[in-house]
Length: 332
Image (cartoon, rainbow, N blue to C red):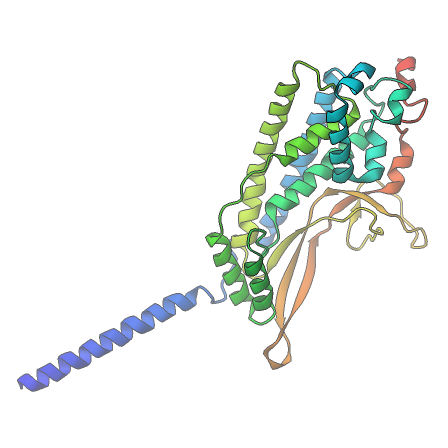
């Protein structure tokens, strides 16, 4: 009888061990089972629209700062020559030559007259929105892209085309949570201040440090919204990869993949326009679909087209180098 009880205890112990092992395996496998997204597509699109609105409002506020503060004079261009040269270089890289020439008042233009508030500030708004949206793209990032760890990025690319979407997305989410948090960068403030400098804002203004701090606080507020979007895209969506998108300058305009927000005219396919800059982020989702022999291919669906301005728009505005650029001041 005692031996029988001992055998039953051993068997119970073995069954308990097996149960614990299978329970642990089940828990570990749960991470890779297909499950609903924590965040619906509609909310992701609303977050993108919120970011676009914030950046538009921020660009308008920065233009107001430019309008309300002193502009540089000819003497300052000599005293601050080194600083202004650095601002020229940063601004050209940030917005491209076309936008740069449309807003810069410290190159050829200053030989005709001192910097002024333009009659129309749309080119300046475009330049600021372009800079801010490029920054937003860097902050949010792309799913499975780990700038600080190229090895992890390459591994995700490998997994993405060889495993079901539920597995690759959960792997991406786990890797993102294990990665070090993004460090806020002050580079965007430097780019904005450089752009304001080439537009003609005086760097010798006693309020210049307060202006910089004002802009820094605005970027911090916007970055909070960007970090929320970043978290949603990288960890809240697992049924697909949600990718924030924008359009590179000089890209041929394609109404099926982008929106020209400054034109209501129907464009002829024979009159191909070039993109000047992106003025609103878009969003697309990419999903791994099963092919034959257990392989997967990536299918992309555009959920929201990025918004753009076209090069042709600049024809509506005078350039700072034009002799009559400040003619509106004489009329007022």
